[in-house]
Image (cartoon, rainbow, N blue to C red; front, side, top):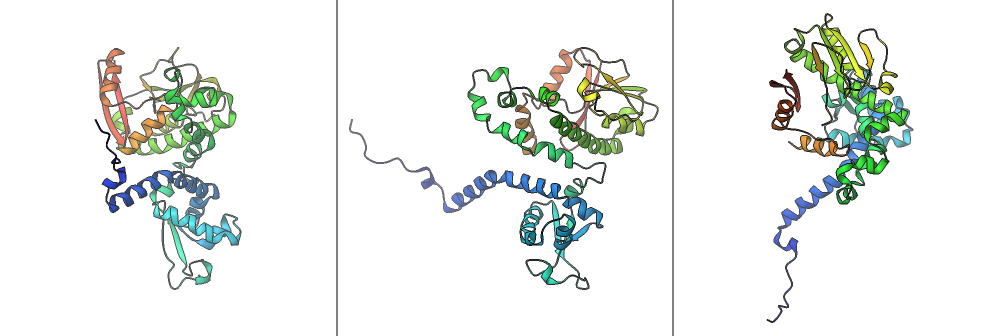
Length: 335
């Protein structure tokens, strides 16, 4: 049979100009997403959320430049950084009032602008106990980023079922890294404390009495530096709270007298208590991102059906899931 000389149509021939432009924007948005993360980290490293917070909630570009120790020649570039973070919803901006002492020459655009905190940037002000700046510093750094460059290699690796791509990249699993590397251990524990402070602030306000009201003792398994247990103990002084964790974690835990720290391995021994607490067991789009992120340490995000199967196989008779914070839930299991 004669072979046709006609060429197969190009894929883009089937797309309208509008589709092509939208596709290009979408690809650029994905490709440049890391720039938003790095810009946010830069703002936190410069102390911008703190500066605005300490100035009563608003600051001009000149205020930020002076307080952050930035040379005046960098002011136009700082404005560009703030512009991106304003568009991203991290900060807001408005024109300075007419009776302000500011002059139009104080900003590169010729218009004096006031930058203000949004709820997102308020959570990055390290002056507050619920600050998430430590979590940002843990997630946005070379050790984390570099791991994902080898993801495609991990998918093709014959040993992929036996190791995570974190381990393939760094030569040890995530938890061994915290034991070997003191700086990483500090980053990790600071991030967990920050996350716990925020979650418990909201959880205790909304659902704490329903969950903890009838308890006299509680052990926080893998509780790190005890931020969760300290929050519970302060809200419910009658509850005796203990934290069980590995030696390298307990060694650096701050002694505050509020909770008891116990060295041990949860897979070998769990102290007796009325309740056992496990937070963020390493196990919409945000959920999908978290699921993929968990994969880098060989973890997994589970739905209710998967959790129910685990509970029943472990011998628990029932469970209850209480939604408390977006994609966060409290899961109660009953023996």
